[in-house]
Image (cartoon, rainbow, N blue to C red; front, side):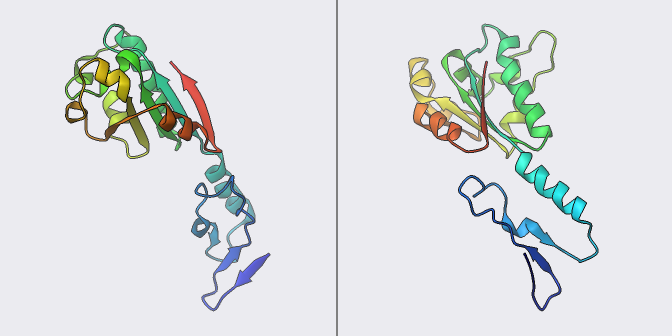
Length: 169
């Protein structure tokens, strides 16, 4: 179904009001600007929007093994480059990555570090396990900007999203 209004803009009747698609595909993006735009390019655009994933990543390695600590961030940067969103939950020693000034000193052997790229990306959410941080004397005022304390309920909530995939390092 299509609807023409007085502006000459056609809107696709989406059927994307199903809960699995809510908050994933903004309906305003489904507006076809002219009748001459090909259906193939419209379908391609819609599929790209639907195909984007949300990766929920758990990380446990910190400064004791900087290469292992870097791997979740390298994966996250790859996902962000592909247009996906990520949430990294830092557990155990990984909480120290979020301490201001810490990740800059962590140099992995081999792959380039991607800590800063992920920590500053607006499509990346980084949560620090609150009990893990407290056990290590890490307080909220010590954390890098754009990170926050969280818990297993937050991790579970992120995994509950329809487009989420879990990745563990």
